[in-house]
Length: 136
Length: 243
Image (cartoon, rainbow over all chains, first blue to last red; front, side, top):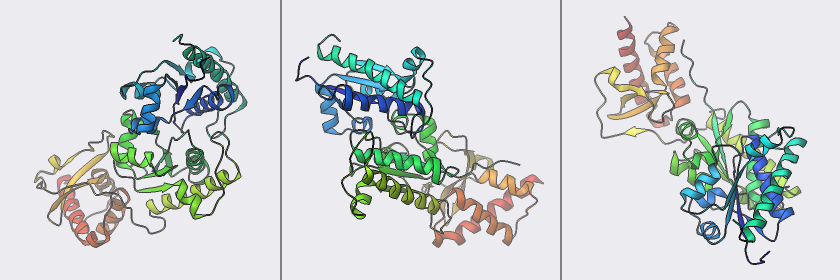
């Protein structure tokens, strides 16, 4: 893994729905636990509102989005900001693959929700590795 | 009898995942939404709002909003103003932290003790603002008045009544107040409700109309008399039409 190639993670930042919480938890798990040296969080609102630092980070580094639902706000907004998305994930897709992990709760996830966030984070971490290796 | 939409306050929280103060704003917002004022508040999804979610944008045009931001960049407040209307109130976590002498906030994923204290304080302040906006503490609602000063009030009442342009389906009516045209939200439904309740034009009815209209529309105290006169005039016209 190239130590210089960092990947920006842009999660859904909705606070009103469980899937949004799962996406945020997954993003935190990637940047704090699984790939702290390779991945970094960028807040969606900063990006959309034109924050120069946030835009530069996404413009200069490959970006992985994690959306809560099929509205895919994170992916759409990065793209509409004229910036590329290297890989995109949704909590909904992760849940479809792991029906036993039904997330519940918004301010704090149930155990299944936490497990789903972890599973998704591991998928994202693998994608981060691939992006860093230049495979995406 | 028409059911008037219950007035609620929209909470727009900062989505600053990259900083602990952003987490404070979300935890505080959820505390208000789930524990402190569950019946009086709804959350407005900031990413959906930014992405053009018409429902959320329409809501924020009709209802007052409180923006809860993590830092001085004020993304939630700016986004609300940019895409809908100026927030009725705004609070910044860093101001609360410094104002209360709290220790450094740490832990974006799991807040430290100071972060949880900050979230409690912010939540209490937001709840207080919500109460003020709902008129429970006598505070005036500081929303922008929807005004169209250059326009004449239509003579034909039906032409003056329409649905709110926000797409929310809420009926609005243009009336002349102090020589300028003001759009009053929910007025057609209020008139219908009053009429069906058997309330006829008169001083008592006008006072009641003013109080109900005030729930949905900001009415500056210095213009109460002018608004009352306009409401009395329009309600009399409405009642005549029903005969």
